[in-house]
Length: 242
Image (cartoon, rainbow, N blue to C red; front, top):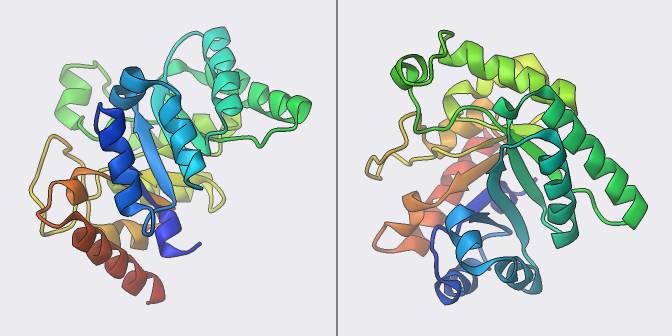
């Protein structure tokens, strides 16, 4: 996989025209754009159509978490939109994930459309061990919980998980090399901290075994976003060649 194919640029805006401007600005450097809750709620599927019209791929990051029937029907809609990948919450349980994965296979074969990559969100990068225990009431360690949820996703037929870079090695050892790991929380050493608590530099995350890197504020908040992205790409290339 080429370096630029690994990077997913987050369109963390609410305005359609602003999102299109970002796509145009970065289209030579980025193959996959992330459409999250804010943008999708504001403008709907037309932003996905626009990204496809530019010859790019979509990671639909809506983190579906509902009863099995609802999520599996939603998966059909996502497949019909032609997104490259989308995600569900692993905390929705095994049956929700299993039924969604099977529905995707069935509808893709029946309607002759490409099956999207299905990912499971483990624990959000804004959550640390204290929050996990004191607010969510989960007594297990972060590593144990993420390992368990990743294994559950693998057993249910998902293609991979979204997890912080701190759990990459644990997931890789538990789920194998064919299991995709998409990691947010990518923060180059020269960027400021934000509300994500379990972060890591791009080079470190690549060395530990991440497949895709979701990058947003680490690039967009810089004075020169293009140069910042080029700097990240260079770091990833250097690490991959070692």
